[in-house]
Length: 262
Image (cartoon, rainbow, N blue to C red; front, side, top):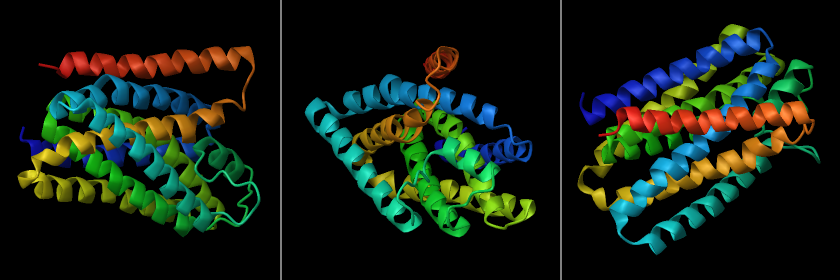
């Protein structure tokens, strides 16, 4: 299969699977399943960043200092972008709109806190567009890296979409409308991927930096957006479950890299 075919297939299939899986979870209000998926997603994101994207970027670049500086810049950039999104979304003193577990729990209990469902969708569409860029950049370097990156991003998108789905329902949208909006939002992944593929045809020198930004994105999402939510369950049993699922996420990325590697 060609690189473009891989990008199109994973973008479409990943978006469809994450939205449908998230809808199935939220319609059954399986918040405990969302909690488990968040732990797994953390491991998948960190595994993809440290075991695949970052080593590949360092190898392609030949300039470790430049790549590590790119990762540092990326983490700061995503912090600023998230602050801008939070500023648009939040109208209360304590707002955790980017925590999918918090979003699922509060929406399930009927508390919208004045958040607009459409603003949530706009932020999610931009996030999906960026995901498409990262997936395309990874596939343009190596198919194995692209597959691993796509797995990590899909694993993160399921709990994120679940939170968004419940917020839309809580904002007054029907289940059909919420599903349609989430599917339309997920199409931004394909758009971002295809634009990146055609723009990078003559700019291969940008690939190491994009992989560095991809690693920064995955590290930031895992450490800033997802891990803090796990600390709401400090009991030993929950902690052991979280650690096991994080390790499972890392292991699945390592296994995928081994299976699809050269």
